[in-house]
Image 1 (cartoon, rainbow, N blue to C red):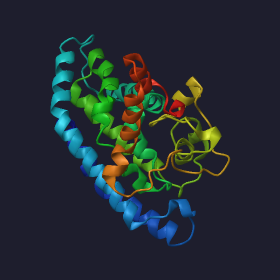
Image 2: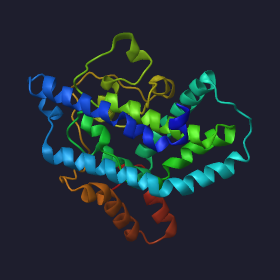
Image 3: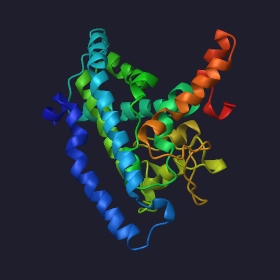
Image 4: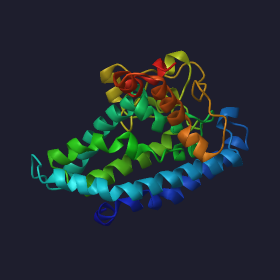
Length: 281
């Protein structure tokens, strides 16, 4: 694990074969066997789009990662505690990072500037394992990295913070499926496919619910939990209707900046980018 922590960018590459195997199994035993709904269908156009978005996301992270790492190292010089990594501290870091991920994810739905990046992940009207690859290259600009800064200031070495951020993202691959229904008692503690299907729903009662990364306890604690009852309808209120990864990436940025340009005052412009996307006209 130390080797991967020294080169955290390789973590998702190392997990890639497992991701591909899970997708093949979902397709073969789910779609081909007619055991999954139409909204779980794999299509070549969307598959290419999702993989392209994932590649663009990874390239963006690599290009901006150097500057972010420099900032984290600068902040690490002001750390509050001298934390030595051990198994117990790794678990503590995982839990803390998941807590901050909850607030990052919640902000990504409630602040239009951040939603402009995150909407890419929600823009598909399908839900299968390939949906996990549907990420935005604009996360660095949207400010995702700001939410991990407290971990560095607390005293966790930047390389371990980045490693755990990527591990959290990797584990979330497994909740993007309709193949798995319910997981019994685990539904009370961890984020499951059922909980995450709710998060991707455009049903009125499902919007802005279940922000969990790994642990669903944050949603239960902060009042954003919703169980899966009604069949989930996937997508966003303003469909992109495109398989072009560039159109998918920049559609909401274009809408948002157009709204900003219409505002006369600077205060109005700031309000546009900070208000919830649901308030956008």
